[in-house]
Every structure is written in structure tokens, then in C-alpha cells.
Length: 176
Length: 335
Image 1 (tube, each protein chain N blue to C red):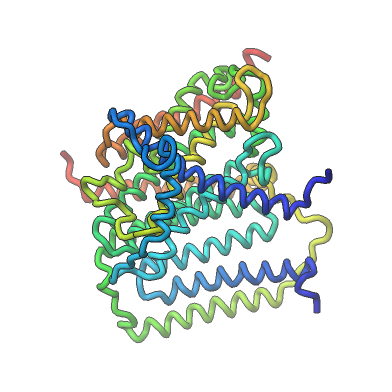
Image 2 (spheres, chains in turn cyan, green; image 1 turned 120 degrees about the horizontal axis):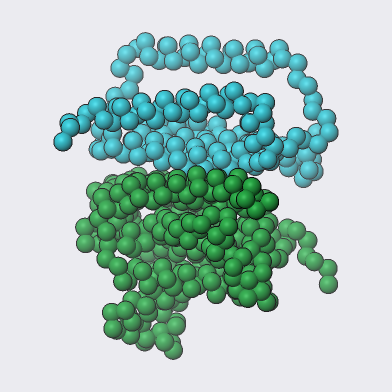
């Protein structure tokens, strides 16, 4: 049992706190009654994930997570919720279909068991030596060399998404 | 004398930065009222202390002793979370701003990115505050504030990417160090890097003004239409925190403009660089921002969004392409 005030103990505590933030955020996002609170929970969860990235020695990814997910994506989701639900008193009635709950439990159960089995059966290799460089230069280089295919594919996906949203936004408009 | 150990140094810096942010909020309000007064041919505050200099102090005491009214039908959690959510990221951004070569709390390699990451959070303060108030005017104001922020963050970030392409670093202190040696080495006059540097600066400055919801872009708090904007339901220090957050954001926007384009703590004629130059440039920019607020009328929300999407973003993109081309072509012409 390591002491709480040794470096290992503090690192473990930090990890647990970040994990707690992520889990709490996720729970709020799922269980909150009001949609806007779910969004706030989701954002808390994403902040926790950013903290975990920072914990894993990649400050660049952590800051990008904050900038893109908490800043941009979170704001867009909150904005959509504001447009979709002008009256916070009208709650969507829950559990209309009895099958919804059962299916939800089944899906999450399958996903959970799958991940658990995967995590338990994999032989984890312990990384020796200093942790790999998580800086911007290293990430940029690996994105443009080792993972260039993935990088290009993602840009195609984003292009498709942009064009798709333009088509959807234009569809409802009449020509002047 | 031994340099103090790292945690103590950091603590001292944090306390100093919080005091800096608070004093700035207090005295920028005073400056704002003075400038407003003189622009409108009045004197401005003058009763409390010489030149009204103690006015912010009295205002602060008034705000803190006020009863905090909490309306009935609000969202209790979001309503209380919003003001700190606006202020805390703003104060945290100060951590990486180099006031001089050595006077910087944390010289982080990703400083520029960190400021933008935190700046993107404070939109949420506006959004949740407006929504949590359960007030029509506040919700409209929040929606405006957010659409404005989203619209202006794009040209701002594109301009910053242009700057990063030129400077090759995200470390703010390093960016300032590259601008050493006189006024023509400041990035605003670096024609060789990009002939449109002045335009970059203007885009950045306009966007930072719009990001902080300043007039002529203060559609989020248009008093004539929206009572007071997203902080309509806040009283006492709840409103005070929103106010402090806004002024802290102005200071950060102007510091970034100073650091990226105007040479930060470098001297215009290459002598005695230091914190005084940074502060002089910073406050000149802030004075400009205040003067602009009191001399230009408020735009409309459509004018505002059109300015961003139809003018600033195309210009910023063109600028990005031009800079990329210049970076490749310039070394070929002048090897």
C-alpha cells in the first residue's frame, strides 16, 4: 500500500479524480431530466476526458479536446437544444415503449462484456523508459507519415458532412 | 538570494494574476466611464476621490453588499455555475501570458493553444447563464452571443494559424523573442512573411472585439432590445463576476494582439525591453477598444454575422493560402 502523499499516491489520486469527473459527467448526461443539463453533463465528461489525455502525457491532444469538443461541439449541441426545446417545462415522456429499456440494457451489456473480455484477455505490455513524446511536432509527423491514410479519409468524411449539411439546409428554402 | 521553489513561485503568480484581473476589471470600468464622459462632452465620475479614482472601490463594495436576488423559475445549478464558468477560464488564460521575458507564470510550449482552448469555454458561461435564467430576453441574448462567438472564432483561429505558420511555434514567449530589434521586426510590419500582415492584425483585432461582446458588436447585451442581455436576472456579485469576466477577456484579447503582432515586451527602438513596453502597448490597445465602443453605433445581428461569414472568413482564408505560398516562394527568390 503506497502512501497517499508519495508521488505514486498523488498520481493515483489525480487519475481517480479525473476518472470520477468523467464518470459523473457521463451519468449526469444520461440521467438528467432536462436536456440542457444532459448537455452540461456531457461537457463535464469531455473535460474529464481532456484531463485524462493530459494525465497520459499528451497536452496537445488534451487542449484540442477542450477546444474542439468542449468549445465547438458542445456549444453547437447546446445551441441545437436551445432551438429544439423552447419550453423547458415540456419534458419528453420517458419509457414510452417497454422494449426501449430492455434493448438499451442489452446493447450496453453486450458492449460492456465485449470490452471487458477484450481488456482482460489482452496481454498488456508495460512501457519501459520515458513516455513517448506527445508534443505537437511528434503528432503532426505521425499524422502525415504513419497515419496519412487515416488523415486523408477523415478529411473526406468532413467534406461529405459539410456538403450534406449544406444540402439539408438548402432543401427547405425556396429560390428567391 | 535563492530563487523561490516552484510551488511558491506559482502560488505568488496566481495571487498576483487574480489581483491583476480584479484591478483591471475595476479600473477599466473607471476608464470606460471617463472616456464615455469625455466623448459625450461630460466629465464622467468625479465625486469619490481625486478624478473619481476611488469610484471602482465604492462600486465594488456596493456590488458585494447587495442582496442577491434569485428568481423563482430558474435552473438552480446552471444559474449558479454560469458566472464562475465565464471568469475562471479567463483568469486561467493569464497563466501563460508573458508580461516580460522572465515575468511569466508558466512558460508553456502550447501557450497560444491553451488560451484559445480556455477562451472557447467561456462561451458556455454565457449560454448556460442565459438559459438557466429562464428569461426570454436572456435566452435571446445568449443565442445571439453564441452565434456571434461561433462566427468570429473561425476567422480568428484561421488568422492565428497563419501566425503559427510564420512563427513555427505556439510558445508565446518565443513568438515575442522572434520580434526583437526594433519596430520593423514586429510581425505587424513583417511584409516579407506576408504582405497582408496589417490585414491579419485588423481581422484578429476585430474578432477579439466581437468575441468579448464589445460594442459595436455587443448584440448580446443590447439594452434597448434585451433589457440587459444574458445577465438580466443576475444581481449583486453574480452580475459582478460576469462583468469581471468580460473585462478579463478584453485584457486577454488585447494581450494576444500585443504579443502576436506588436512585439510584446520588445521595445520599438530596440532599447530596454521589459514589462513596461508590454503594459504600454496593452493599455493603448484597450484604450482603442474603449474609444471604439463609444464612437461607433451598434450594428444589427445580420450585419454582424454577414461581416464575419462573408468578409472576414474569406479574407482570412485567402490570407492563409497567401502565407503558405509566401513561405514556399520567398526562400526560392531570395535564397
